[in-house]
Image 1 (cartoon, rainbow, N blue to C red):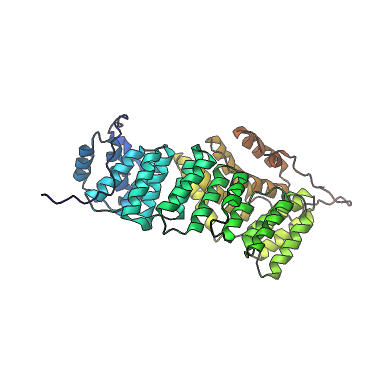
Image 2 (image 1 turned 45 degrees about the vertical axis):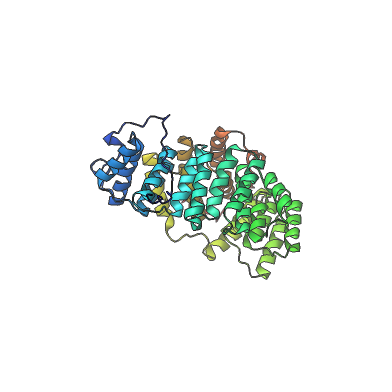
Length: 436
């Protein structure tokens, strides 16, 4: 009898219901048209073109062999990245992984597996997604991490109920015993916070908290977004009862909650408590306090905090602003890239440097492309513009955010108008940092 064939890493999938795109040479940008590109980028582009245009599995294999591009793990990563951002057919991505493993002996990296899971889930190919996970467990279980769980649960939560998301979490826990159950539980809670609601996440936490070993990270996930300061304080008290002491992230969440409720005095008491415990405040701590002072109309204290931030070196990010703006300019020129992800980092850097004019320009560019800035970024920008008395800019950005639907109540509130002149007629905003 012939020997039994070795188990294949992935099954070749042919999507017969979908016609492949024409194999046009323009699909792969060349160095002569778009400037010099690295060999790795050129190889990734060529492989992506072949995989997405091949009519049959054998045609794809023959074309890849004729291209003389050697398959490798870094190349698979680059091609998977193209499948993600170019919204390529996820079944063809799965086919490439199959061919690389079965013909070339190239095992996919954790990044390639996570990306394949992401594009499969995005296309709602959940049976294929679970098949890929099952194969991964059998062949390379170490490739599955808490990030993998976040991707899988995030795709499920996008279109399924909370109950189905929790069921998927339990299925993951049964499949991968080597992954820390606490990390999986935290991944579930973070997914529910992002894709469902904070209320759903907290309900699941209270239902399952005795089944898993919770830690500080668990509580910090659930602390974000509290509107009631009393509820937030009670949650931290429960945290301490379970033997978990608060850290910088915990204090930042509490301070932000009190500042949004205009209880800046309580926020300052928490700041003193932090320092007593040798926990140094960071940029988030100061930003929350400045926002709270702006809400109650105390610009002098806000200026003092801004001065303290500069003295501590919290307003500088080691020259990364220029690099971030260069990346943003490339994305705008090519109209390609993850605007939401990059914008959060860019706005954070620009706000730290006080470059509010650049913030507004990039914000408007993003909206022009139909991309919605995150609510967190919008609120931070609004707070700093309020301190700098740029009310017209706030009005413009608020109007643009309203294009994406109804704003949260706190985003609709009229910005507190600080007194522009003191009793002797001097301007009250002297010394405030202006947009660079």
